[in-house]
Length: 112
Image (cartoon, rainbow, N blue to C red; front, side):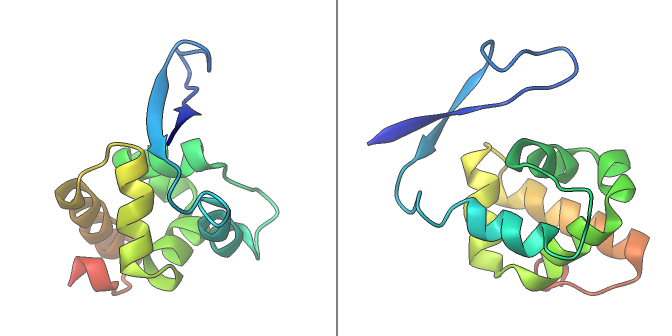
């Protein structure tokens, strides 16, 4: 079973681009990631915005609380699953974790 995950960006409309998302744990995913990432913050990131932050350092720096929660409170396996759903490789996810760790001064499992 495959679902369609839509990505909207500054130059894209949601109907223009569709990424496949496996429906393995759709009841928990990505809601569990987003609940953890957004819990204490008034500005909420949706799944597409979080994925964008993983591939754009300037965007990650603009959402430091959510990014810190993602790398520090979400299990590494679930981080990888989330990234994979948006076609972000494990290698690129590790690079994002290292760059954000350098920016924030924190340590994260994927950045080790």
